[in-house]
Image (cartoon, rainbow, N blue to C red; front, side, top):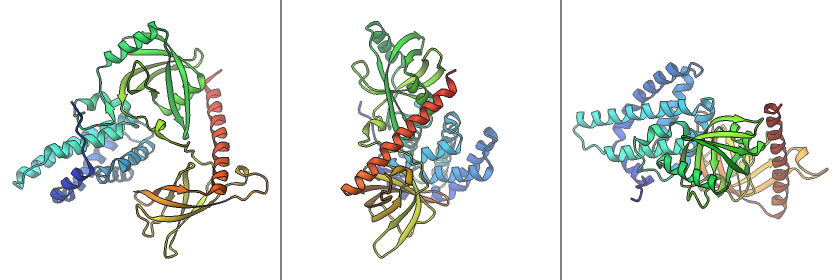
Length: 383
């Protein structure tokens, strides 16, 4: 049966008809989330948990791209604890649904429970797609019909495919990202015990996988969808890794990137010039041949679709001797993510030949540095 997708127009329809509830319930939601958060994670302060709760509540009905950006922020704030993030979001969302139903009965209005559950399920699945793989089985029972990101399939079907591949001496291909650089290699299936599968793997892939906190397998003749799995154990001495909790993915964002997107090693001051001579400054967040991200404390009227002139300088080590370090490109704002006291601007850029050459030189150099960093990380684990 084809999966139903909750569109942004459906979300906006719910927002319009449930504005009173959403406004009145936000303080209760925040208090509930804070109570859960500080009870289970002593390292997160009350003020920080409040900010996280507000971001989750305000991000619930936003577009998929905004939710995907939110999950990255949550992952960092909560020390990459995917299980904790999954528990807090799932429990607080059930609390939201329970109170919405009570509100609808109290005010004698027609509840749109199915639409709300669809929006919540969509939100949970988008968060889990990158952040909380360890709780996917828990939320599968909640609702999977609204997700087009993850396909929950009986694990035994996947394990049976691994058995077939092992018998036919077929390898799998792993893919992980490290600071924006794709790390990919083939791996041999060594052993299958229940739902755990042991692979003999390239050491660089293994450390990239460990730092990423999860494993991704590219689809092949045995799997018509990409796979994601949890890491049970890594043994760098034998170059083996044990994986479990395999699930299907309908897409793998790393494979959809046209160009490598690296995290800069420079604190570049970026200036965004709009029509009317308005200027917004910020810090370079990431960079590729066709796009970049900027984090800023200011907005100055920047909006999605705005045309801007972007200026910043590369560091001296990233350009040839006596080379021009200045980058100046036309850009278009494709997303604005608002945090408590800052903004992240995601932009498509249109460099000319000269600017493209300088950006390419920097990205190539940065890619080599990142791979060197990854090898240094590996040395920490290999005696």
